[in-house]
Image 1 (cartoon, rainbow, N blue to C red):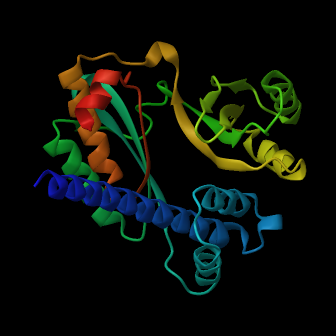
Image 2: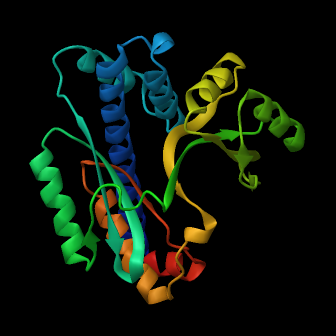
Image 3: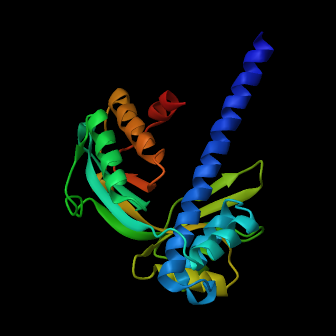
Length: 256
């Protein structure tokens, strides 16, 4: 019986990973669609599309899927509208939601419903302008054998402003580096990375809360907030969710 339970757990985990993978591909396909509508199907002349394609490659999205998304968008495909929502989760945690939708009424109703069911409050656009700064966030692997400090200096010359600590994966033998740029410098930085043949695993404009704006809660309250965020992320119209909650190891463990 224990073996059966173990296999059931493995299948559940695999199913969850497959679902996340599918959702990730769907979000990237939408971003490709918007980029093509905005700047055409040629990535060389369309920075937003070039970034979306690089992100697709970073999560191992099949080449056929990428090409299909581009060709479909270049025709009479669905037109997506960018919509954002701002509000508060329990405990006063700020939540900023970015969506791409082909039906605004459906998206508004869904977002409002999640706020209401999770004891949150949907606010007005602009209400969180003092909480989040929009920055370029780029994730890449440090080239094998490359000195980290030397590599960071190269990235600064290309336009990087700041870095997170390097995360090392001993099993994979890789070192991951996250770097930041200003919103205005993001396009130039990603283009400079392309020209320097430095591959990224993800690059996007994100909303980052300053350290002094971060919110600390007890574990139970924090888990309540994380479940709300998870509900938003499970919505097909949602592209990204940002918040200013300080997430502890205890909260993460409780969510597993």
